[in-house]
Length: 178
Image (tube, rainbow, N blue to C red; front, side, top):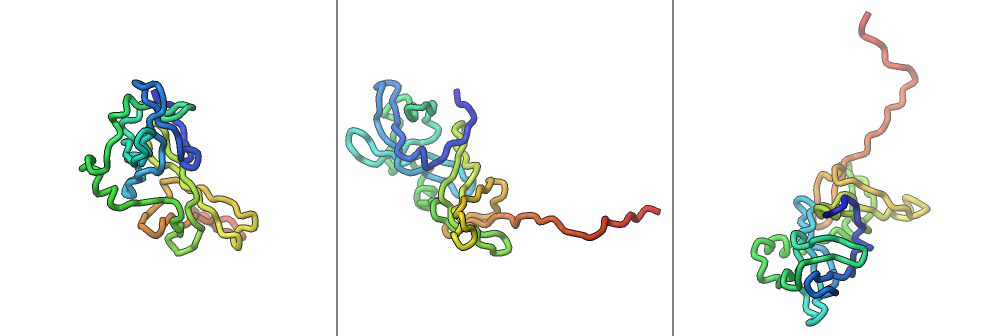
């Protein structure tokens, strides 16, 4: 049973993949396979512990995420890229969030994606974290952007909604009722 929680990709990279049948590690995560159309993590590129080959673990084959790693039924769920016909189009995109520029609709630059958080129960990316340029923010802070604020994603940038600003007025609005 999954507990709904967010997990940072940065802390998930290199996580052990544990086989319930073997009772130990069979692989380690390398990079996510992200569908840019819906920000769903379709699966993970993993390195097989035995052969050191690069295989794919589909998100649907993950039984649980535990403190020790990712629990799967068996090593057999790890697949070669050529065997995953339905995933071919997403794999061809070779999409990565890391390093993408983040701009608003009006063209304001917010920085570049430094990390993201995904839900461990459904593998949808919920938040992206943007490192801001030092010139804009002397502390060099990180900006958090919710998936609902994203308007467009391309191979070069993410476009977000312009933040709403309060209108400052000197007097309250006049009533039309009279």
